Length: 299
Picture 1 (tube, rainbow, N blue to C red):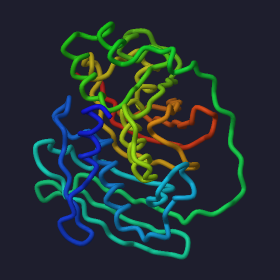
Picture 2 (tube, rainbow, N blue to C red):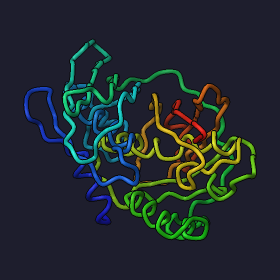
Picture 3 (cartoon, rainbow, N blue to C red):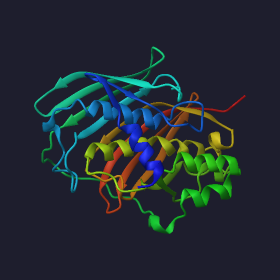
Picture 4 (cartoon, one colour):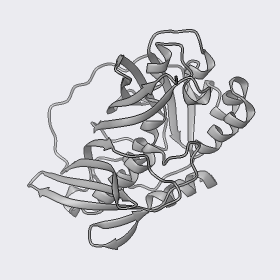
């Protein structure tokens, strides 16, 4: 395991300060606010730690030793988080049914809510099975790493900060990212392969939380591509996540290659919508993601 992944896992290992109340800290950010994927992943950890043991997905994740079986989350980003202050996560136990468990989590800083999450967990059961076909994508091992690609297309100080911020994850772009094709609008679709930069424990919730963390990194790139904009890296767009939803369809490991296939069907009113599917390398549809974010052109 590399040091950056170790730091990330420490961030996800929340401190319990009271029943259903947890505290998390943040890592230094490349922007003056807490990374949204971190808050979402920490909130899901907090929710999962209050779920009964019978919601374990030990039979779903290969070689798993258990962990709550999250099947969906819906979240709103309310305020920018302060990376220099702890975040307190309060969990409401909304419902424990025979098959499903629902939790609501509020993240608070400086006495104000910055993030709301609703998450649902399910006992494992067999059911109808179908999925759409996985899109074509090159072998991730043939693609350059972020550390190799970023310095070729961004100023050195920006590339260095991005590489450092993403060091816990091996993230590989299939096509040129938006900051590499500024001024050249193209189809609003992008693909990246990703996996944790090291071996993870056999805990299904941890793998889901790692995917949640990564899901906020690149999803709005497809919005920028449609307009030939490069985003914050080149300063031609101001953006922030507004809401985020994920559905976890099938078991997966976040330390094995996952294809994040992303597209944007619309942008308007200073907002952009991204939707995506996450696939395992052997073609199983693992996750569906939808996010809307602020996408403003500076004036």
